[in-house]
Length: 115
Length: 119
Image (cartoon, rainbow over all chains, first blue to last red; front, top):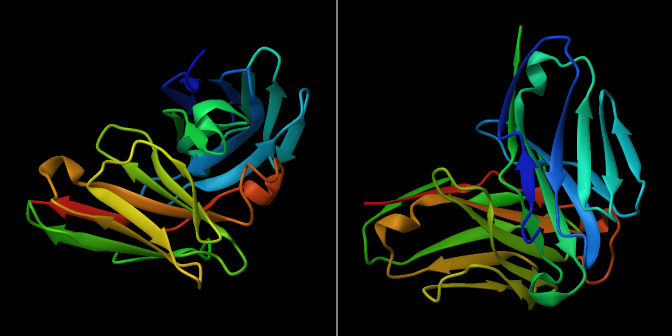
């Protein structure tokens, strides 16, 4: 994988459903993986910064896992609420090469939670 | 409120003109990043400054330039504007940057953005 890729592109769930989506990133020169939440008409807001293989982070009903060897991270939302509706962005920070020191963002997963 | 401020909020100008976008980072943050979000595009990294020095460049056009001043605020200058430059420009700041730390010290805090419309 050369770029940061997120799937699915969009997701519609019902209130109360649990959901998850994927971020794939280059595993070579991996340094850190960021997750951001971006609500419409607002700015991206940091959720997690993950650095170690096997890392698990949790903030309320949102959690994330990291596998640096295979280059993927999962974001989980338990019991989705309408206020969770947003675009969820992941971004990879690489330690070397032309991308050294800068975040490369995926295209995002647009989550819509229906009441 | 992230603590990052950007001015102006909206800017409407004509092709061929030059504009300056301004960003003030959170107090204590040494890094400033600029991003462009065009219609149907994700966040595209433009440029990063750390403590006054340019640290990384992304897909920034030669018509665009930026600088970070001693008080750590930053300006993004866009010249010879074209219709395709219409976009939302975000500034973000962090305490450090990825070259120094892989921890949450490089978590980025985004400003509200400047909406640029080129007519």
